[in-house]
Image (cartoon, rainbow, N blue to C red; front, side, top):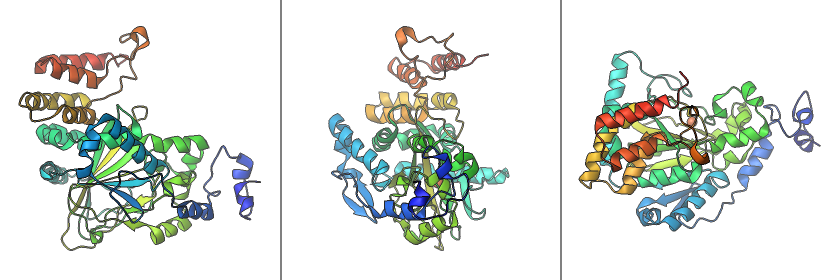
Length: 405
Ligand SMILES: [Fe+2]
């Protein structure tokens, strides 16, 4: 008996019955099953969360700084986060991820100037899940911020909380990318959706991927949003449907009108303060909300963090970023303005941590070990106080070892 027969629905065409459990179809999605999964609001035990608001675990980072600095405690916290993201609500909030909002304000100023420049050049970016209008977007904000203002980038990403949550979901050598989203007063809401990878395919394309790949998709990316302004509910913080990541067929369901209607009726919105960060499983049904205020410029820096083993959505020139950041990190370390953990968090947000794909004729694995990563090159340059020219040469050499021409 297939899933549709179990629920007494007609078995029409080449659907789940014929295809078996190995394949999902849009027509085989069941709102009844979806709602049942959401109703089961059980969660892995929450030992570190300070509170739960609208089903979402809230973590006060002021109470967690010491936890993150201790290796064993950090591992326990990360296991809790991974459990929440996979089996629990699918979303968590890091309150005061930035205790000092100075770096947020500095980055906001840079982002606003990038938006003005892109508008003046006529390349203002559209938003892919909402109507054009009052919304602004900066694609590849990661590289643009780093090249425009490397010292601001360093202060912004010298944040061990962000590194800890990224590693909790993806492990080390993650690839940080980011896009800035500004929703001005009057800005429209997005439609409910899931995110990259399968979330960016049409239902027809997604149906061609076997069921187990639908599971894998969510493990390759972590979605985050750093609040650059206070976000009262009227300003439209992201609408979220807790537990919706549990529905395995969800990448095929979110366009269906019945699922969209259910989302609008049951989604929650949490007000955020400037400096808070929200992280969620990319399989969670979500949508940016409408900005109904007269004066709040709602800005979020959307962190899309990819597994070392996945392909990031954006191409990022990490060599140029490493060159721009090197002097800042060298000076900050010499003046003891940054701790080792902060410097590591910046390196992880900038350089490529995974050395593959490589040209193994040029960079053979010695003794079965992976070649050196770009992060290792940057770390070595800092440890050994290389000159700018020496780092530039080493990074060019690193790129050459990865090319086939
Ligand atoms: Fe999204």
